[in-house]
Amino acid sequence: MKKLISSGSHLEKPIGFSRACRIGNQIAVAGTAPIKEGGTAFPGDVYNQTKYCLEISLKALEEAGGKAEDVIRTRMMLTDITRWEEAARAHGELFSAIRPACTFVEVKGFIDPAWLVETELDAVISLDDSL
Image 1 (tube, one colour):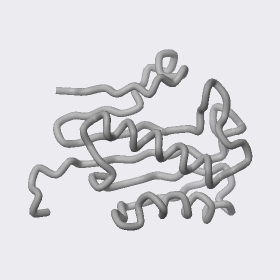
Image 2 (cartoon, helix red, strand yellow):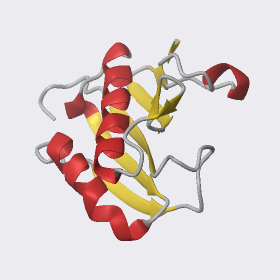
Image 3 (cartoon, one colour):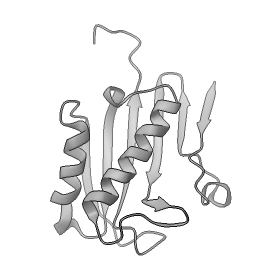
């Protein structure tokens, strides 16, 4: 059975996506941008935009039945890769003990030019606590 999670983003309906999708014990959280009240959260601030995006993603993950410890992969997309350390600091604050596979990539841009970062994450809910 598929479970779809919405974050209420104004872009979900016109694009046709969900913030997160769970099938069985797997959860995928869509690319998450720093959208806040129809605008951009923390303009110009890679660290806080990253932290905000990851917090939105983790909230959707929890709503889908997962938790941060279930995250196996994150993707950090930046418009300026020279600022990767700012994003890495936010990522490390949330994931230093979990240490999922992580990829940083530079992209040409996002839907809104004020977005400096967008994040994705994948999780697998363990069916065996011995793992």
